[in-house]
Length: 106
Image 1 (tube, rainbow, N blue to C red):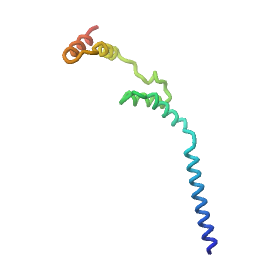
Image 2: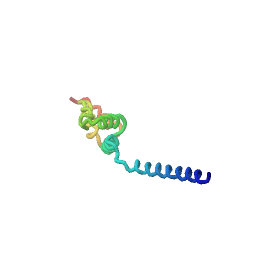
Image 3: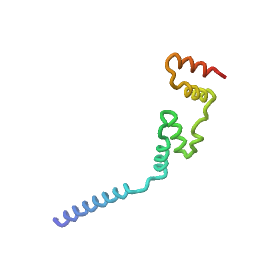
Image 4: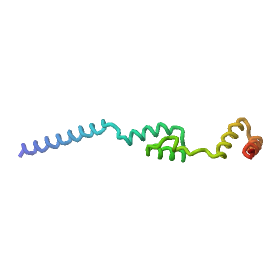
């Protein structure tokens, strides 16, 4: 009776040891292609926030090019970007007046 109990305990310890070794092997596995893509896309998305980041990550994870994921800027957006850059240093009413004039110019 003692021998069978000892054998049972030894078997249980052996099983636990093999489970621990298996878990260590799992942790050493190479990342999957999807995990590698996620890491790469995450690095490329640095600086992007909100909807822009969501759109970028979605297309990047699908394997689409970064250029295809960024929608083209409209004329109004381009004008806004240019006017904003030109308005640097202006504040308050002076900035409002400048932006109104700049954005309404053809």
